[in-house]
Length: 103
Image 1 (cartoon, rainbow, N blue to C red):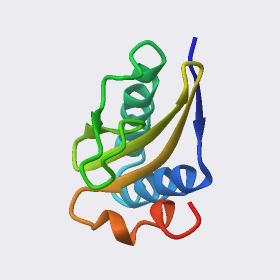
Image 2: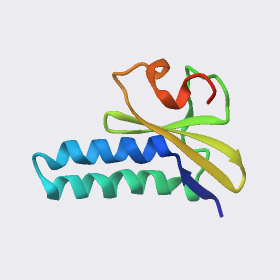
Image 3: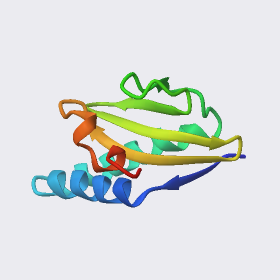
């Protein structure tokens, strides 16, 4: 079975998304968290389900599309996946700290 590890960036991304939604509705913020986590958990059984991230051109870096977000992950091994970012589709990936120098 594949182990999924959330990066610090992802935990902050998720918190920011939920906090933003929570300003209008706690109920919908909870539902959004459940949906995002459900999307990520699909990787346990289907790690190759995401497409290769076009900007990175590396088959180990993949993404799942969830609403307006790109859930970007790296396949480290057959047993380990790192979730690197929950990235809004309108932003440049080059501006994302998960893909900056030294990452």
